[in-house]
Each structure stands twice: as structure tokens, then as C-alpha cells.
Length: 196
Image 1 (cartoon, helix red, strand yellow):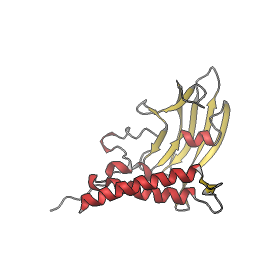
Image 2 (cartoon, rainbow, N blue to C red; image 1 turned 30 degrees about the vertical axis):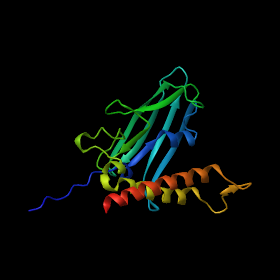
Image 3 (cartoon, helix red, strand yellow; image 1 turned 90 degrees about the vertical axis):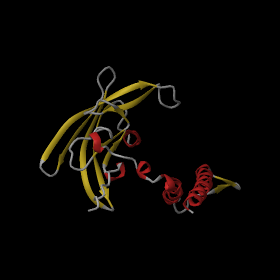
Image 4 (cartoon, rainbow, N blue to C red; image 1 turned 180 degrees about the vertical axis):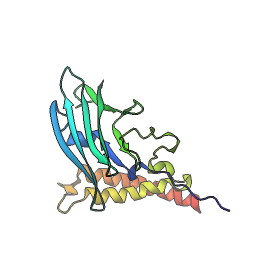
């Protein structure tokens, strides 16, 4: 009797808490800020979470998360923030990381896997850890993922009325996209050669 396939869970199939998103939303400024984050899948709401950011000089910085999981269990816990010295321009001399409540690892993204209640690092789920999509691609087809990623990025970046050229030269975003498209075409050609 054949073995049933097991499909590991990927990071794209889970709810995530990203520092980059919180920074863009203005929640990582000094002070106390509160908001509600909402998740959706294909236009249907899949969850929400209350988030309070406490970033005060001279005190421990943290994010307080409170939400209901599985429509029965209430969660209310802190995710510590750690500022690490950085020499990157625009970082203000430091870079923030979230400390995983389970493994104590630094992370910029925490994931909440279905069936679990706490946001944690992707390696916190033991042997059934979360994988990135690129880790599950067969080696022979690995280059094709880049090819299709360019299509997705084109749809995301190009909006009606957004200029592709300015004074006869490609704009920065368009030039970057063209370069990625050329790289992806070269990789895809190599991947197709290996398949034949």
C-alpha cells in the first residue's frame, strides 16, 4: 500500500506578525500605541488581533498581543523587543527584533500556525517546522519559481497611471523589474534545459 503524502505547512499558509509592517504603520515610534490588526484570505476575514506597542526610552520595550484563538481560548501575552546596534543607514543606530516567546530567538517575523495559539519563530514548531515555499521546490524546477515571481511582482508594482519612463529613461522600479525579468528568463531557460 502506498504511503500517503505529507505536505509540510509553509509560511505563506499562516498568520504572521512582521516588524516591517508595524514600522510602516507607525507603531514602532517611541511611546505607547494601540491598534487592531486584521487578516483576510481571498477577501474573507480570517482573524483579528489587538496589539499594543510599548516603546519607552529607559524601559523594556514590548508588544502586547491579545486575541481569541479557536473561538474559545483567550490569549494575552507579551513579545519582547530587543534593539541591536546597527551601522545600516536610516536605522537610527539600532535595529529592532522580536524575541520569540517559545525559543527566545530573535526574529523579524513571527508566525501563528493553525492549531497553535501563540505567535512564534518558524523553527519553534519542532520537527514539523514551517518551511518557505522555495525550500519545497524540487531542485530541477527551482528556477521556475523566480520566473513566476516576476509576474506576481509586475502585477503588484504596476498600477494604472504609474509611469514606466521619465524623460525617456526607465523609472527606478521599472528598471529593477526589467532586470529581474531578464534574470528570471535566463534561469527559466536553464531549468527547462535540465527538464529535457
